[in-house]
Length: 588
Image (cartoon, rainbow, N blue to C red; front, side, top):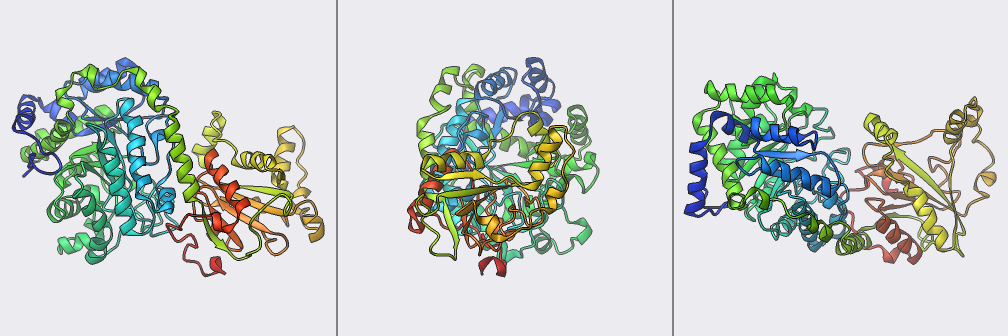
């Protein structure tokens, strides 16, 4: 039974009556439409009108765009919605998750490195002030996963570290910050908990194989904490829970194990019955392989609702998916009781947010409010404060290296290590979205401080230049790196290896004796910086001095340079994960 008078709704009799009257007035098509979140593919008014009037959507997500464009899109969505629509954003790390010109505050792992709940609170408040200003009313955040497996690139930088107690504190603080914004809701993710499997649910199965006691004491503790803080909604992850599901249903066969979003044992037996969560549940994106590889899509859609999810994230094809769910409802595959419960939670949350008490033109703020959030100097100062407190000196074997000053190390060579970009990264670069060059920014900052800094050009980079110039590449460059050590180090006093890897593993040039890989850590001082994923010691275990900055924003690089020049005592960050990645050789 759905009780709209208790946590997290606390509805009045009048509000409950609105929910009941709306359900009674809805057509079958309108009921089914409320079950769907859709990713808008265009800001065209005719497209948005069709989504709302033909498919009667309960919620929307959208592709990145400047705040003014998103706000206008959201105004159109609410204009054509008979029932106010959830408009969600991914404000995990800042307002940049709501609009392209929003301010990044700090990723989960970066804020965890400060161990300051106040920063998590301000992240929840500031990020979602931006979201609310452009007409969003729901965050797919906080990320409540626990980073147990360093090889899990899906959440290693997004989660608040590997300590369940810290994850619970930070997630609760984020929720409290978001709840300072009237009518704003959060959907915590990814239940029942990512971070154990090294695989990415977008492209493979993902398994949480904890037993009942382990899960209850870790992920369960996190979610119980948030539920007691009036968490509005939960995003279900496509995560298999074989031991827990088996404990709840001993008759369940291995081949019948489903990811949480399709598992009644997990979404109903665990989340509803054991944890007592009364709020709304939405699936994670339905294109992810961990969900789509289990059965035919026509069977998957209604099963997600029957398992205990209230909303389904994203059409594959609007016409096909909508009518698949509609047919399942009309044929009784989705029962009247199950439909009514889902609608009560969806509409009950909209009533709790006060959406039903506003006219369509009141659901999205006036354009002028963007001046208060886009480029807000208070947000920028928060970014700077977090950067100052987060930069972490993880490994420090050569105690005399720091501080780094011009009179001690005048000539600085910067080696820029990138990740494997993949097809999407190559496409973004071709479209002109390069993401900036942190090595060049670091070089400029060092020069401003009096250093003679230069960026290392690898043999591979030289050959690429030859090809770009229409010349035949000199393949001998690849093998020409081997020479006297004295010749290699003669032009530099120290090396900073900047590992700018946002996902996956670093990509080295692998030239013979070249400088990409710091094989020379005993020949010249080397400082390795992880300015993306904080797990670079797995690939550069020989580093004698290793620092995590967690991102390469301008304020972060300023904090890094200051601390390098001040010395080891200036570093305030704590390691929120095991940055040594459990590897013996990374510690020696």
